[in-house]
Image: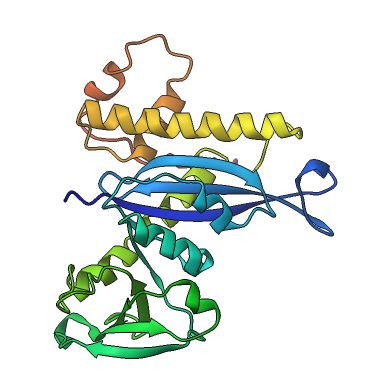
Length: 274
């Protein structure tokens, strides 16, 4: 079965409540939420939804339709055992970080390769009242990061339950969750380069329009890079387009005439002597 890996996350965009009264989030704070799913294979957005800041992450996640055999990596904000049971019934795998206060009982332990940072590989059942929403077994993988020394515990349903055989290696489970960092880089990139933080208008329509234009720009840059096999970063491609914004030239000529990507622009100050 082909497995499609999806990284899903949500980020707040803070807004001034005085200027954006329609985006009320808390008593004195305004915000909207970006719900984004990124394809692990190409690290491109598969879907994006913009909601008000009060919209819960899981509420939006339940509305998604994912293909059978997918692997969804989410953070602890998405932990909802009813939703996990729904994914399991649809033969969709999930990988998340276990909460510290999670109550469970160990049913089986598997040998681990500690040289890979794996400290434990267990099959468990949830024993809390809320955990009864997920009656099946779960897999709990312990991983110690060799660089930071931090200990993480991951939770997944990647466990058939018959024969006691795990489908994916424990290290693979840890690597799938570690790949969530790519979505952090995505949010950071669009904020810094596409200015999805300061808005030109204050109406809801103006904010939505600017966000969707930024997403279209990101996809167009990615397509340009892929289709023409450019060895440049998206930031370098964007910089060239910005420098030639008012030039009437073929698009590909901007990149084929330069043997190397341009260096970051430097501000030169010329001080006059007195």
